[in-house]
Amino acid sequence: MADAKADTHTPDIVRPPKELVDGLREVGSATAAGELRKLGIEDPTILGPTPYTPGKVVAGPALTLQFMPKRGDVYNHDEYSDPEQQLHRHVLYHTQPGDIVCVDARGSMTSGCFGNMMLTFFQGRGGVGVVIDGCIRDYPIVLRDLDLGLWLRGVTPNFHTQTNIYPYAVNVPIGMNNNLVLPGDIIVADDDGVVAVPAKLAAELLGLASQHAEWEDFSRERLLAGGHLKKYYPLSEGARPEYEAWKKERGL
Image 1 (tube, one colour):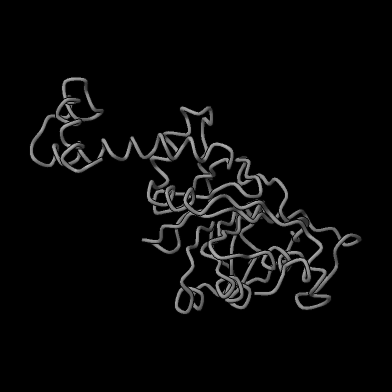
Image 2 (cartoon, one colour):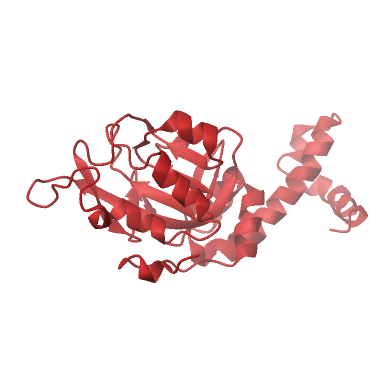
């Protein structure tokens, strides 16, 4: 794979250890969001983008792209003019296997931030998902031909700068519908939604979330067998000896 430094002047991100990313993927967005509250993040959920590839579950470090309002004296490129001046390309140049692109497109419903060709390049470099507070175009082709997870506000026939926004900065802090995403944050996305996990909290979160997921597995078994909600959800002290025995049986 080509070195991104040869392709772009924009900064790269610091990627977290793979085991943290893999663990958080298993945890899922709902448990991650709930446990992050215990760590001081009141609402880590990125509102606006919704699942456009139902069933997809991804986690990975965030490459970030910021759009800004377009003004003629600052940006007047056409779709294909001076392509290397168009920063939506540059964020993709940084792609490494497992990366997710997060785009602050200002909630625009009239700009297709990426299309089929750009997303094909992204997948070819190992990217696994995109989260856009805005739209893509070529959605039917992307859905048919690619295997990316897509969380979007919508789709549009328009290209990225056709109307009123343009790509302004790469791998900078962005506001995704007023939710802060830093470059290198771990994104956890599934059918429940999208959660941004601060990289510095990822290890602690994974510990908490793994414990939570473990007792939920136990409680789910008991509830399915007719157990009472009062005893098993949340796990009561009365159920804890039973839970500890269940863990021991499974070598947990």
